[in-house]
Length: 199
Image (cartoon, rainbow, N blue to C red):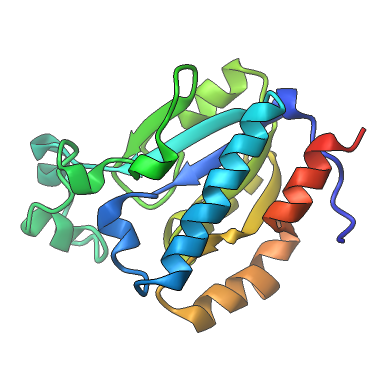
C-alpha cells in the first residue's frame, strides 16, 4: 500500500484513453491485452459505483484533421498520409467492453495528449473535477503527454499501473517507476478500490 491520499469521487475522473481496437492491436495479443481490459472494466465499474466521473478520450480524424497535420509532425504525418484512424472507423471506436454510458465525458483528440486538442479540461472544470486517475495506451504516448500536461494544470494525479500499457516494456517501466512518480501517485486497481472507499 502506498501513501496515496484517499479519493473524493465527487471531484475525481477516471481517464480512459485510447482504448480503441486499432491501438490495442499494437500490444501483444493474448493474456496481457485481456488482463488490461479486465482491469479497466473493474476500475470503470468501481469509479461509477462510488459516484465518480468516467472520461473517455479517443483518437480519431476527419478529412480536415488529416489535412491540418503538417509534414513536420514526425508522429502524426504518416497517419495523415495514409488516412488512418478515421473517426467513424469501428477500429477507432471505444472498445465495446468499456462502452461509455449516459453522463460520461467523451472527447475526440487528434494528437497524443488528452487535453491539447480537446475541451476535456473545460468539461472537467465545469464538473468541479480536480483529481484524475489516468489510464491508457500507450504509456509513452497518450499517458506521458497527458500526465505532463495535467500536472502543469495543477490536477491531483494518479496513474493506474495496471491500466496503462506500452508496446515497449522497458520504456513503460522507466516512465512508471522513474518519471511519473514526481507528478502522480502510482496505484493499482486494488488500491483504487480502497482509496475510493477511504474516508
